[in-house]
Length: 73
Image: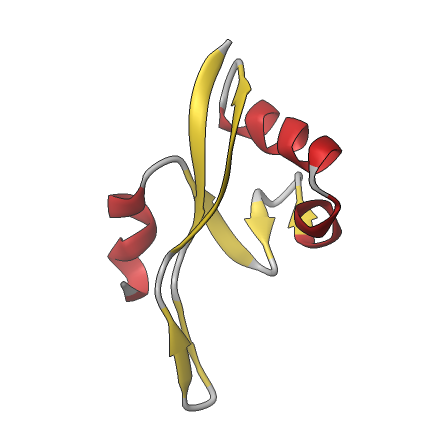
């Protein structure tokens, strides 16, 4: 098992924007499994996590802040 920080990318839409966000920290054999494990522990994350698309509220998920910030900061 490996430790993962779980980040989602920033956004810019309809005149609003937001930076990359740290969603949580969990373990797994890969990022997808870590996200699935976080979803089991955090109902707020689970509600908006799509494991097939690897998104949170439609925003891509990353394992580090640099990649998450690359699209919109």
